[in-house]
Image (cartoon, rainbow, N blue to C red; front, side, top):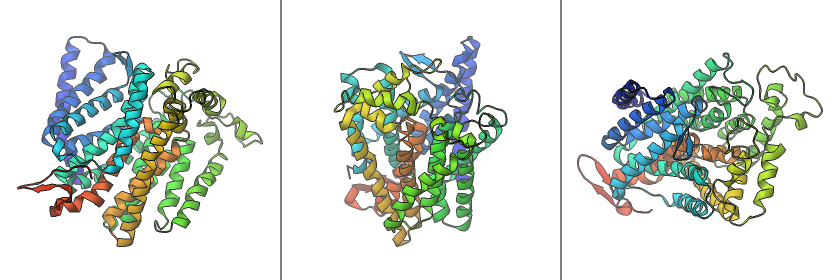
Length: 487
């Protein structure tokens, strides 16, 4: 953990200097204050680019840091219009990260690792691009393509960074997950008593509870894996601490689906991965029991702290439960429109435009229907739905099988990362029923970093260290240089 903090500080110190310098210079020419956060971000990203050229692990650390901050302060700054596209500070940051990652990978194409399990994601993104070009929906569809493609790109970049730094990056990422849990927990503990999490229910001036809760499911998955397979008692205690803190923080956000999923993860993490016949019933029953438990609490039913509107569960509480418009109009509207063009869909970004047209102001003109599978069916049709499931389900199954095999071999390192990947993917797939988690890069980014490390530990690490020619390795001094083809 000390090395992770040291690497992050060493990388961010000159970055911060560049950012502050650029911000100060722009302030001198009296640019609008609204642009100051964006100017600061531009300076930071300039420094990140320079340092990434020298040390590829810096960008991985920056992705994790950006994920934590973007999930917390997603509603803190206004969006700006850029080329007809409405973007937040974090949105501009993700675009810059994508450009940097593509730039670095382009200069190191011969060393790039591309697992076959990532190929279905490439096909899905290709279909999304094709539908966007044919049924053009402007910047809305373009943002969807960015959200779909950036997490797998970060996974590929993480594999490249691992080929350069190997176990050092693994330890660095593991240490950073501690701060990825503690920082949101502290901010939630501060903002909740100040009333900055429950202002007019849906208008949250600083902290968006759904974003924080969905994001924390990923660090929670790793924390549970660390609790189970930590290399020593201290590591397991840290995993236990961060697991409990992440769970409590998720519960405080009053996000029903994320809370049920977090409780489900605790159930699944406590069972033997080799006992599939025991796992499936627990995985199915646990969330149902969790939901039945949570709706007994008026605050969860209404998604509002201290509202004083309802203090007891009435007989028609299920009908009165606040669904944020999902049951009322978003899901029926999206589905009824989707079945009019069910094979190829209406084009990337069309669901957000459709639902946004009926949202009460001052909601965004583009508003996703809070169901990733329904969103995909509407935009990309049955073809897109099949490609989506063909990408995620084999990836989840492979990580499950790797976790099971590592558990039987008592390989704690492989078991830890494969378990974290399995739980993370399962959490995302489950919460996508009521949210658009696959559109949140601050969720998909850390998830694919975990998946990339799990693949590295199980498939590439031993070959790189031993110089196994099966992946086209080239050993040189002072470091191992990996030249990999599609494996």
